[in-house]
Structures are given as structure tokens and as C-alpha cells.
Image (tube, rainbow, N blue to C red):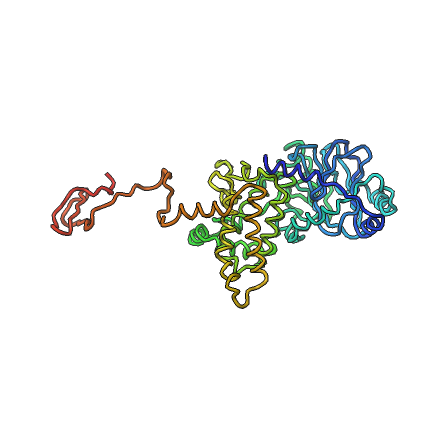
Length: 479
């Protein structure tokens, strides 16, 4: 992706700021440490929104704030080679990882035996690695929190990437072959190692008979988000599909209820997970889900923003944080338009904008929907207007100003232009649509009749209201 690719490059410029000794001591005592051993110089090691280029003495990152974090390894400048892992860091926690030269990514587990792992953890707590570890940038913590404010361990499990799972870009239908270094042969060897080394703690009794099932999280897999946000989700009846295809509100309600038990926080958390996996790994499944759920939330704003004000308050903040990570060319990015038709999934079809950048359409729909749904409440100072409604309406207006200032996209003008094009237009086809039927205007009082008793099967007769006499064949009939 050109625009988003530069955005990913922009993340690498985040550096640790100068801090006082007291601040450094506080962050060391309350933060965790990620130790990474034997990584070749020139390799990229990342944590959240910060990418380090590994040098000869690099051994990891310290002062990591408590919480969920994404660590990754990959060849410099090549997102396709990256493999990532979500880890939960506790205060004074030490996570140990090691480079595997055979797979060119993380080794299995910590990469060390338990005794060596324990020694490395004790050394980190004694500050033996202080000179060889970089400090987690203080301002990166705020950025990461805004991007992942609703990501939880349950959300990660729903996205197919539980904490501790090695994650790589790829096709969810064939995650192992697509993601394991070395192709199908390496994937087969990895399966054999997993089966040979499986332990009861990593495999259930029900799983033991499945010959191809992975028994641990060490083999990289692609994320899998399901199709809850689709216009045609699996298992839906024809009536449901018809309703979902034309009603964004029904689709949003179903997506939240079906995939997250009615908890919108989980739905938004999956959107955020998809964004960071696309941003940092270039994952196509993640991109498809982010596009689908973002487009759905924007389309449904006009009917849902008032009823689901807390969701839209959180979404507008999250969406702004996501756009803040992007380059100025984001709205011209080809990767954010339609996927090629032969590779288009249900989720990708929902996110498609007919070849144009979907973000432009989505932002117009979101800001226009928020104005239509919320401005009347705010301007009239309606009794009982919640803080969430007021804040969401304010953020919608700020998004309009920000889109113009950063991206040069005049959302208000584009919304007005779209309104003019659709005003008094009830015909459901575009003028240039080659599949649109041809409409022929008929004179007033003309109507058609088929009298089977008096004409043959092949005869079509019409009469006029004035004379009742047969006339010429009607122009709109199939010739």
C-alpha cells in the first residue's frame, strides 16, 4: 500500500524522548522487559508502534507499560516476512524470545530451556541488559492505547490470534502453508514437530485425534475474523440476507449480537485488532475486516448514532486515531479500494467502494449520518441528551475539519455533491449502469391485457381505454 505503507514507515520514526532519572526509575520499576536473543543485525524488531533496526548489541526493549502489546520480527523493509505475537506484560515482568535461523523468526516458546530462561529473566531484573535494551518511547504508549482501547484477550481469541499465538499475514483458508517460512515442506515439518512435542497442557483430549491440528501457538497463522459483518453471513436465511443487504442498522445489530453477545466493545475491539495487524503486518484478512466493519459503522451512523451513542463516541475516537497513523496520500491509496473480483471475499465485498477509495465514501457517510442523527438533539438542547451524544456530534465535526486539513478532503462539499446527485432520484441504477433496464414512456391511458380465451398463446394484444380496439405491440414488451 503506497499511502498506508508510508504510514507504517512513519511509525519507525518514533524515538525515546529524554527523561529524568526519577522518571526512568519509575518506568523501570513499573514496566516490563522484552528480551530478544540472537537476532541478526539489520533485522527489524517491533513493539506496538515502534520499530527498531537491530544492531550488534541489541537485546530488546525495557520500560514496557503493563498491558497487551504486539511484538514482531521481520526483514528490514519487508512487511511480508514479519511474524508477530500479542503478549501481556505485567509490572516487572520479563518475556524472553529468541531468533530461530531455520525459520527466520521467533524460535519455539522462549527458545531456551527453562533454566536458561530463568537466568535471563533474573539478569534483566538485575539490570544486566540495561545498556543493550532500548527504552519504550513514552509517547508511544498513548498512541498504542488509543489504537487498542477496546482490545482484550477475549477479543484476540475471537480474531483467531490468542495471546501467545504467532501471527503472520496470509490467507485464512490456508494459514499454515501461507505463513510458515519455507513453504509447504516447512509447514509439514512444523506439524510433525508440534505433534511430537505436544503436551497435555497445550492440547485437549478432544484435539488429540486430529492429525493435522496444531497443538501449540508456535507456528504462525493468519488472523480469522469470521463473516458476522457480511451482507450474506453463513447460516442466514434468504429473507435475512435480503434485509441485511439493504439495512446497515440490521447488519450492525446482527454483527454485534452474533459475534460478541451484544457487547459493542468486542465488535469495536475486533475492528481495532484488524487495523493494527494490517498496519504492522500488512495482513490482507485484517484489511478486509477493517474495511468491512468501518464501512458498516459509517453507513449505519444515520440510524444508529443516537441509539448507540457510547459505541459511536468510542468509534469516532478510534477512527481518528487510525487516520492519524496514515500518510497524507491515504485517500488515494489503491489498496483501500475494491479488491480484484476473483479474490473478493464476502467481507471484502462489503467493504468495496466500487473501485473508489472506500474511506472517502465512509467518511462522508459517517459525518453526514452524525449530523442528521445528532445535531437536532444538540442544537435544541433536548432534555436528557447524554454526554456521549454531545461528544460524538462534536467529534464528527472535528473529523470534517481534520480531513480537510490533513488529507485535503472536503467532506462537507462531497456530502453536498452526493446529496445533489441523489435528490429526487428514485431510480435504483446509475445513469451509466449497463445493466439498467431501458424505460420507455407510454401515452396516458394505455394499458396491456392478455385475453387467453380469445387469442393464441403467441399473441399479445393491447387495447386503448378510448376505443377498446387492438393496437400495435407495446414498446416496452420483449420483441
